Length: 306
Image (cartoon, rainbow, N blue to C red; front, side, top):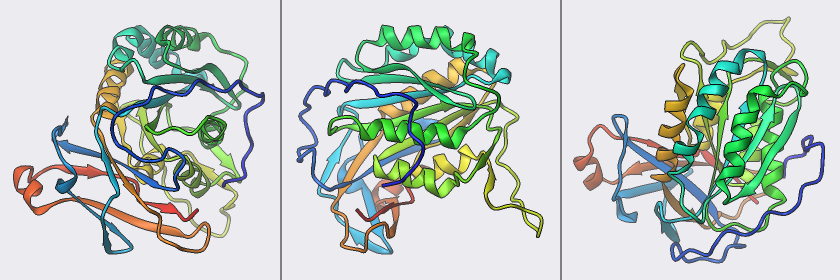
């Protein structure tokens, strides 16, 4: 597990989600969940089966022990950057909160976190979507989390929160709304990727249209302890995506739809020394590729051996 600064308070344990029919496996089993998205252009591809995917671990083909579709329960954390530059995007996201969250199913749960320099839990994981909607509306008024934008710290706070929850047999996702600004001290991207991997969580982002990945800093004067925010890299490594737009509301609805239309492949972890990173590749089978020749497949880049 990753050792990182936790949240500033203790939180009550959320209720367990309703039991679902598929996939069938022991919730507490040491399985690796590979959350897969397939896009044909801008549209998610629905109706795929386990035979439509090929999974390789360190170059060796693996057969998943279970396969799940959008019928699985979902836990979503909305992670909102409330620093000074984000007011307009926060208000746009709040304006469509009810319509966007209405895409979720009764067994799904949503939590809301706010962050700037520090992180605050604004709404616990719950199936009561009205609570999350209210937290979205209140987010633009948050002024007590300090100056700055600590994206990596905030994501680690979310992963630590997930660790406190009961075992969960569904899928987990984070949607972070941020301008991708800020610099972190001794919280490198690899630590965040490890944290997301430990709780089998996909990171997705919504950023302003002009946001870009940071330039790589090199040279003798560069301090490796300081790293710029890069949600693009973190999302790709976890199997998620980042959408650019100045209309955060439309992107919020779109991302929730895409998160719902994803696939889950579960693997038994390969015996390896603890914390060894195992590279994963997920592709469409030859037959599926013939049907969708231009499709893009998004999946986590690997996992850390338990």
